[in-house]
Amino acid sequence: MPHESSPRHRPGAGLSRVTGLIFAAAAGLSVANIYAAQPLLDAMARDFGIPPAAIGLVVTLTQLGYGLGLIVLVPLGDLVDRRRLIVGQGVLSVVALAAVATARTEGMLFAGMAAVGLLAVVVQVLVSFAAALATPAERGRAVGMVTSGVVIGILGARSVAGLLADLGGWRAVYLASAALTLAMAGLLWRVLPRNLPPASTDNYAAALRSIPVLFLTDRVLLVRGVLALLIFAAFSAFWTALVLPLSAEPFGYSHSRIGLFGLVGMAGAVAATGAGRLADRGLAQWTTGAALTLLVASWGLIALLPVSLPGLLVGVVTLDLAVQAVHVSNQSIILDRHPQARSRLVGGYMAFYSLGSALGAIAATMAYAHAGWAGVSTLGAAISAAAWLTWGFTRRSPAPPGRA
Image (cartoon, rainbow, N blue to C red):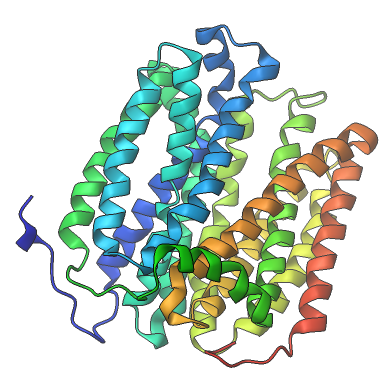
């Protein structure tokens, strides 16, 4: 594709709505590759003869790859041409997805899934690039738009993967994703601005060392990281444990039917852009507090299962809306703190996210084993209350540098 096909970016021009939507679609597609495997595990296990207890390695290795990518790949967004980095990761993702789709041994499957997770961190480079292109007055809206794509990718991946697998087998899911990712890489090569200078002159080693330093020396960053850990622990606790009561009596739902609950949760994606607009108006702290209040309240509705399925559905929408509103507010705040280190800030922030998701999943399954759905609801409410208290005690954190 000719080099001249990509437009030059005019300083101060901001991020157009069309480009923002392309960013959102690319982010959603990338993150969907991480979660698409969950409804396919049974089919993969049968295909390779892997014991059910071991097939969970597919998810584990994908998440480990993602966590490694946050550390080793995302900081590159501050140091090199983001356009080349994003497109390069897209092309390599096509290779990884094709390897999974054509895997003939479990070793190749596991290696391919780890590579898929590693390269999916292009999502975070897209978030920081969108923030860099946007004007200060529209930065929250831009981050919210891209985050909407991420939410749709996470919650829609299970349903779409299940449908494609029913039509053509689990390998068809990864072949389709490889084709879409290749097309998206070509589109991004055309629309992403070129010849933008790197945000920082640091070398790679210095960039890696600076990540913990930034979070330990800037109280606002640390607080927002802790909030991310807590809200995504609550989010993960709900979505990990939900399959347990719904697949048992009196419901006995199939995995495909349970996957449809993710579509209900997409309502949270609508909140993402709204929270970004409020952040642009200087209301990020207020938005955080209101959303955390909703998050605590959502567990009262979620606890109604199995007495009231409609109550659960309202709780799902409320929980997802609250989590995404806090998530967008968090990113809007941290991306204003140190403009020269936006990719590193996103990578460090998402490390809190990943840790919270892992802890929430483990805690939820243990809570369900000991106290059923009431135990999961109590756990989620307690984690959410801890997030609300963290915000309450730290909301007067010092603002400079940047806005808070």
